Image 1 (spheres, rainbow, N blue to C red):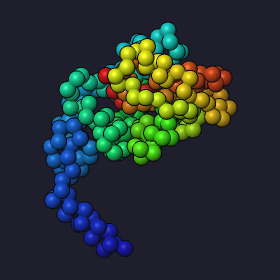
Image 2 (cartoon, protein in one colour):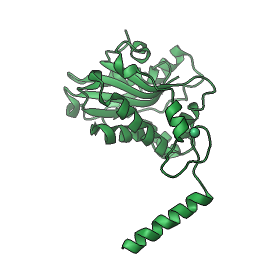
Image 3 (cartoon, protein in one colour):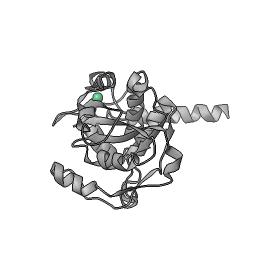
Image 4 (spheres, rainbow, N blue to C red):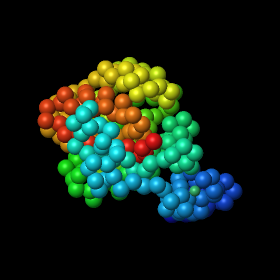
Length: 234
Ligand SMILES: [Zn+2]
């Protein structure tokens, strides 16, 4: 048993020498002990300090739209930023591990924030089953997994369902995005979440249309308090 483990570790090191993994942001080879991002990219990551102020730019997106207790993004990116690649690979290049990794980072960033002190559960923004089939996973569930590992919060995977597949939002205006997503979510067994403080998680916030549509459904649950946490603000 011991020897077996030893050999496996040796084989692992050997392959790492020949095929080193690459930093998902800059493409440089990772050294042993690094995971997903190289140390430089991890240090240079454009983290927000949004968990510390409740009128931050992500929270403001939802003002006058849905009653959200608090909202945050782990980092922000501009066009051409190497950090934008992380989200692209998470969604389109079959890299679910990026979601778990950044979900943990999101957890670290909000764990000490007084504004999130009452949160007790996580709701990943659902994907339609047809989309899960082609992608292989729901990226928001991967983020929820990482977030839960750091915070211990329970994940509510089936509390809200996406009842209709939606077209991609990327080329749409704010109004078109809202029309595209509103009414396409439905609650499932909502009684289990009565009175709970839950955080809705997604990979990125742009106009907030998807999160708003989800929030509109979730806030039909009696006494539910809703928070929002995303990896990035575009
Ligand atoms: Zn890097």
